[in-house]
Length: 482
Image 1: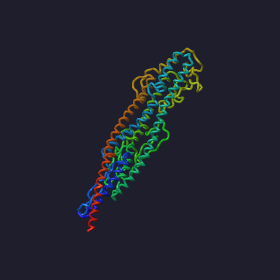
Image 2: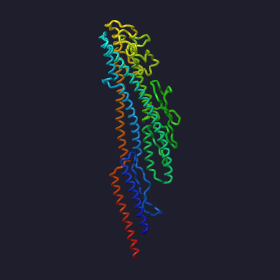
Image 3: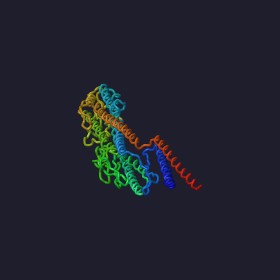
């Protein structure tokens, strides 16, 4: 080996170790950077004309485990869906209130039942009738509040869909651009690790909204597909379409054309029903809350309001056929049951605040003057109507025969049970996601202890190559002295 070759080899070693130190220091600096994958610089012998000419470092590579990444992404999408559903279900449960909680639906129904009993037992008491009116108003107001919260939940979900669609479209466009840049860099032999990190963060962002699968292409680009097979990126990026709805009422559905559905490149896609091509992430959860959970809660509370109205219309009505509880002043009409809980109100004939009179609770809604003070006939009939064990309406989701108060408690219990199930599911996927992240980090994350050991090895190798240069320098000087 010539002296010049020895010098060249040593210089290549110094260059390789300098680059290795740069990589290792970059790893340490990004040890806590989310989405950063550890870099390695593969070393290989530099061969020229069949002879070794030192060492060279190939382009840096990101350390990843595709299976660990895929497992983490599946857990991330499922956790996002579960968390979004949990939040929505908990919101509905709070609107109903917990059993035994003061002011809850069940509590107000029981308070109304107690007020009926007191008014029946003391028909001559104006205070008892005033208490009955207040209890009836309180029950109706709680139904109004639950109905309002149902619509607010659906509107919030609709707005969330619009935001997520915009986020996905922006991310898909960025992924398309990064794919193109990676193709160019690979073709010219330039480093792409940083771009791959950035692309992975964008893919992860999309994946939490819509679960995705990736497919690698030979030029370094990737294709993105939804779990159900819809193409999001394969060359050009797809475009998701959605039109937000400002105000949503109980009768508005996708089927009626009142609400927007999702489109991919103009093609309609069913979301939120389970098993669709883009279900499984936060977008599917938002559609489920808007189109499934919210309407189901509407149906239950509207059926409860209808049951309440019909119980009292069977006992006493005013001249229009309306009973103690009305549909914004009108009698019950099955054709307009959608949204009934939001409109249910006390008959103005019995409410002094609306020009009515308390004696009509005892003497009849159509009474024109106070009757016998001790007559409990109507109040007894009203109490019996509310406490009667009637078959639960189908729309409530409850089976069996129940009193009015028990039916209200059972409907509220459904919301509480769904919220509990949602919380359990969210907790499970949160734990699962944590485990999957740890498994991924074990492969692609930065271990600073290992990097410190690596730096010591680099230091030793650098010093050895420097010693070779020092030796070559000594030999050259010795020759010059001859």
